[in-house]
Amino acid sequence: MFGACVISPLLLAGLLMSNAPLWVVLASLMIFLIPSAALTLYGFEIGVEPRSGVKAVACMRVLIVALIPLALGLGIIAAYADIMLSGMEFLSGMHEVRMGATKITLPDWILACASFSVGSFLFVLGAIALVNFRRVVERIKGSPRPAWIPKHSKASQVFALAISALIVGVGPFIFLKSGVFLAGAVTSLLGAYLTLLIVDQQALKAVYEELMAFLRLEA
Image 1: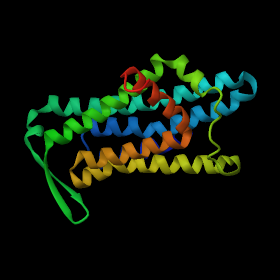
Image 2: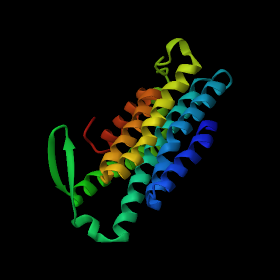
Image 3: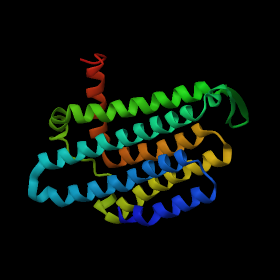
Image 4: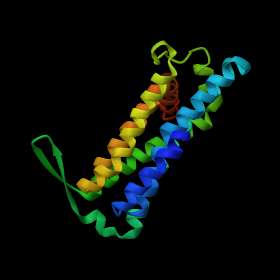
């Protein structure tokens, strides 16, 4: 989290110098804090494991997986709500989406609906993790966190999450350069999702299974 306190002002200064809209600044900072928050909670988890046992560690893992999608979902929903309240003309425009040498022109309302749907899904995913907190904890209590850190090196842990933070931080500048909000949002979302996968893919899978069970798509 200390790294976020140092880097966040730099990100804020860069966005303000680029004359970024307020909603872009707020959404970017919210998403950018996710990797550092995950790193802080993960470090706290390592600290409490010897004293509090397996269940306390499982609770911390579920808390991480719950808070990250909630923050992502709220950030996307708030950003698009601000855009729509500022003027519905945003939805009547057209955007060029480049895929290599191919150019596709899509209406802004399609991009808005797609992004809003992603934000809503992430918000619901985080909410399910909190609502079914005990059930998710029981699911992962017997499954230790994957040893993704080479030789359990703290330097490797910090490096992996720093890469995630960098990907998240680049997102808003891609948006400001291209003018396509979806391009920047997808980049930041990939960085945040990478954080989740790095930190705990097993807990993320357990929450997703709870969501599928809630929707009666899975027994």
